[in-house]
Length: 249
Length: 260
Image (cartoon, rainbow over all chains, first blue to last red):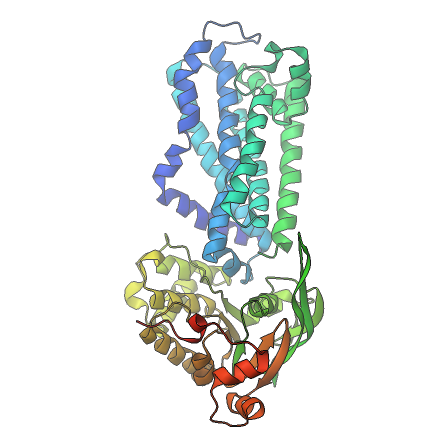
């Protein structure tokens, strides 16, 4: 039943995404601009890692895509609460968990699609990375999206207005981006900043992804990255489930 | 036979300014096949009560059964028995009427073919056939309301909850909706539980009224009995009766239908 319901909800929202193709492409715009106008600045710089600058930057941009996109997924549900769509669905026998999972899986699909577009553009700019590493990268984007979208939906169920939602999410995503070394490796910075960034879970995902992009799969970074990504997804979906089951919304 | 019965049903909200007792203890029964008008001033607890009875909101006190199913013990049974139309409606303006109706059918576990067939049946019954391929956002207020009700009737519920169903509708659409509600009761034996601010609507449509004030039931009975008991005459206006019961009138904007 849960699978059936999740598939139904997923289908409804995926069709919704397909209807707004503009929004689908628009999401890639920000990381694409970084790729075009920021990427070339790095090509000659010593970034301390293995591989060239594209292998350092593109993993960061992929996670940036997931971070900024999925964190704002909740806006949709605030809109739907106003339209009464959320309550209407919650009175049907559809599993309330499926109402979350179907939406979250839609987000993951959309972001993996956008990630593919971004990587193709990066290849055109000069990225060369092993295929298994690139595929692992998509896996990380999917897991990150699932985590952040679940949290975003949970938060959105709890707040009444977009005005209450936007600033909170902004306040969380900006430091998350800066402290996880999405743009440049944290190891370039002073020791205190490098230490601080280890308290930011996304840091481990970036490090793992950069290893994957240079074809190194059996590293400590990879192990921590996978553990953090899976742990974060489990925790976030658990939080989301709790809110979706009980919320008086 | 009582299709809905509640005992001490209550809901307290926690807020920054301390607990707010939105519903303080509602005792009521609704008989199968009747149209119940649930009236009260703004903030009396009407919508909160409705949301509890439809499993959207957990009560903080009391008990209730809907169609024989206990609200706390068997929420799935309650959901299977009831349809709910929120004040805001419940359709996505970007999606077509057909897709919303079919998806709703699928949510009620109908197979693909059956859901499509049910969508056509509902469209026929509610005069939406010509609108099936329009986006929901392109419908008029009255059409939109009929769609909301069609969605809620997908599984042929025994009880239909309507939260201020005619707010914002023009007089023609209101009359059409009254007709529809009566037809549901007469032809399908559907029990209708509706809240309204319009006293003329309650007078014309409801078999029985429950008037709530400050989170408790202030009075109940047929419109005639309430007029007799509180104003001394069956010819009194429901407005005066309402005033006598709650000690305050609905604001002028609420007592008159939205005209022209």
